[in-house]
Amino acid sequence: MSRRILLLLLVPVLAACQREEREYRANPIASETRETVALTALSPGGNEPVVATSGKGRDYENNAYHLSQGKRLFQWFNCSGCHAPGGGGDIGPPLIDDKWIYGASIEQIVQTIREGRPNGMPSFRGRVPDDQIWQLAAYVRSMSGNVPSDAAPTRADHMHPGPSESRRPVSPPIAGGDVPPGGQAPQ
Amino acid sequence: MAGRVLLAAGALLALSGCAGWQNMLDTASADSSHVAWLTILFTILLVVIWAAVMVAVFVARRGRPGRELHDPLTIDPGFDRRTGYVVGSLVAATLVVVLVLTGLSYAGQRRLFGPREEAVTIRVTGHQWWWEVRYESQDSSRSFTTANEIHIPVGQPVNFKLNSSDVIHSFWVPSLTGKLDAITGRENQLRVTAERPGVYRGQCAEFCGLQHAHMGILVVAESQEEFERWRDGQIAQARQPEDDERRQGLAAFAAGPCAMCHTIRGTNAGGKIAPDLTHVGSRRYLAAGALPMSRGNLAAWIVDPHSIKPGVNMPTIKLSPDELNAISAYLESLK
Image 1 (cartoon, rainbow over the protein chains, first blue to last red):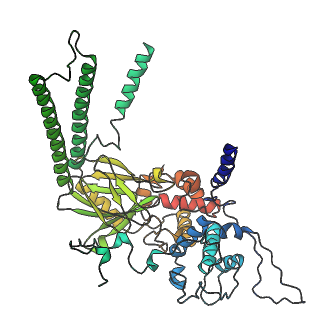
Image 2: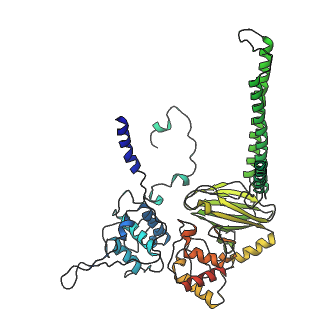
């Protein structure tokens, strides 16, 4: 009897073997998905504007690998040059707030990166492969907390208040005494 | 009989492994021969000690025929004295061996990491999964960046400054030097003097991700004149394409996704995150030792880098066959 309970207890352990899929090589490689997005809620004739998305965005938003790659590419492709390293905004608009000029959905962000937008945002179509555009868009969504927190990338090193441990100079030895270092009053 | 022949053949094969271009026993610098000498000394001495202990254990277990066991209750001063001598001398011998080996290792450390003058300073930065190589010079117009292939002059002390841009890597060229880690935010220094010309292969020696095994580096040791000629060639900007195919290649390279990451000095391509391709055609290998340099391999690598190095940061990109042809012809011509 107890053995059966043990076996039952082991079943959830097996579920932990499920690991997130990492897709290193986008498939299909070079083709662009077709996303029909609306930039306004208005549409002539009184109907809702037509929106048709491929659904690819969900795979990217919930995948920690794609999000962390997006974070890396955000620096590499110099998105940080205009939107600031943390996405706080500089000569480009901030990406960490909840104001979206051209829409908040991942498909709208993908279209923004592909097409470019007026007043400075260049078009990256043909310069950045489409899967990397999706990774970037997913990371942009993560900046304002729009992706699952277990998939979102960690905070960047440069945002820590001090330099990381490996970059600090070697600390001087602490002289002996009656009071242990942990018990000393702050200087 | 057949088994014995097979064994002998196997031993021959093992011996043939002692030559080759990535081998710490086939040394080409004073540092690595010092390490190799220590390795051999330790191996021989410790094997001898191990064999002596094994013989002693077997002799003791067998005992001598006709000899009675010592009765622990009788007092025999002679037996106690003899046992004391044996144990005492063995303890002393152990101490001597440990002290001598420690001393030799310490002397080796002093020699390997002692201060020395250097003629060439090379900054090597580990990336996932390639090596960025920057030759530093007082005159900034004579500093330049290349990747995955280091040239050094024979007989001149060279200083490698090791760093990493992402995870911990380890720089190891067995024929020239011991390994040293490349750590983000730290600068580790490694000094090497090659004693004879040759091409020595190195390898990342700290697991750094999917393509750790395909993170090779090549060190080419050559005479001072050859080195100077090579360095002047590398400092120069990329040569202008001479025919239409290569001109198209340059245009496609600079206008397409390649230029987002790669630099070719003297053109509009100025990406800073992937290997510098200014003189890529002059290198012996591409993709950090994964493929020999040739036009066909360049095209294969551009078409689908992930089938050669799965997980590599170079993406599969959209290129027409004509563009691919032109780009690989252009890159191959960048000597």
